[in-house]
Image (cartoon, rainbow over all chains, first blue to last red; front, side):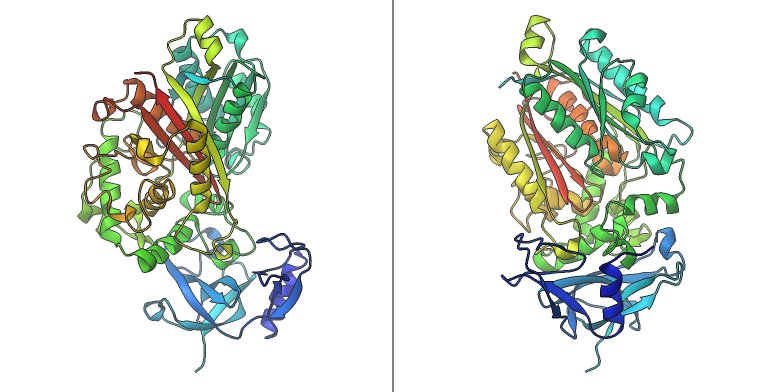
Length: 126
Length: 388
């Protein structure tokens, strides 16, 4: 399935050229968008995503949905990247080493169950 | 504006009934509500029906007419879908319709059939209430989403898994007196803490079960109730709804549910009351942490204070503010699209005195119901008051 706007955004992240959408008031959002979800402004510009983010919360999922059957247990986290927050699966870091405040970079990986691309967080190199 | 009265209520027994069709479940609840109301069949003018995943569970869309037939009624019927708040929004539209004068008698209700699907399929089906692009593809399940909120809550305000376990223990204890509840089994804090992890920090006993069931409520105008001499002591005096960003990542605070605060503020203003006037509450505890977020959003507790309320004995059966005397979603069960009106059924019976737990709140005058969709991207709050 093609998801215009989203697919291009994911491809940009995979290429290390991730971006978010900014409105004139500085609110951040993610595509596809035609207006700012926070204030309704119609003028959105693409701005570079910060290179690293910080984990705000996470969970190790033990009971997966079928689309993650071959991944469980896995850690899903929400991390802040400047004016936007992203949700992704944590890779290359043991579950017991994931913590609030952990610094991560964002990239794209493959879902082992569905072969679909998904957003992944990896520990940021110091 | 016409006042709205609850003339009749009905439920199926909640539980695992994988063999029963949705139309049969709804028929049982609707016929029970109709019998309780004693309103002439010809007087029903509209049906407001909640259902979340009928396309997935029964391959049945366009359920309005199917359920009107099941209820034995000949009137227009519309289905409302708002995830776990489906029946809450259906009920709110029913209230608005009577208040506007457009109808004098309506039926509101909901139904969900879930157990005919396996756990994995149900998990996938429930996940469609989350943001597909930004949450489901990143592995966020329904329990996972509340686990993200629970960890954020512990970090922001304190509290721990043991506090949450006390909520599960309380709600299981309350369900013992509710014949319609899915579970009639008391549990201990240790049982809850030692149960298998679903999405850490949440365990199996932090989660509501997978439930089949239906609920229905007959609403009438005050004028109709008077003209027909109906025994309908419970009124709907406040109604409010709030919304939020669909995905958790787009909200400023991960441990607050402002949609419910907006819904509560509207409902309280509508009823001319404040949180201090609330005597008893039925809140949407799809997970134990959800009860905490509900209590704080409803203004019944300050942020950070709700998590210990059950452990301190304040929201238990004998506490100052009993919460989820029905057993809550946790122990009564959570047939997703039926839950909003099931809460209305339970609260009506608690207030009018024919609930198994009415003796815990003999003087209660004001009850509040809180029904949430997704991770509270939708919230509906109603205020019910009884003539005393």
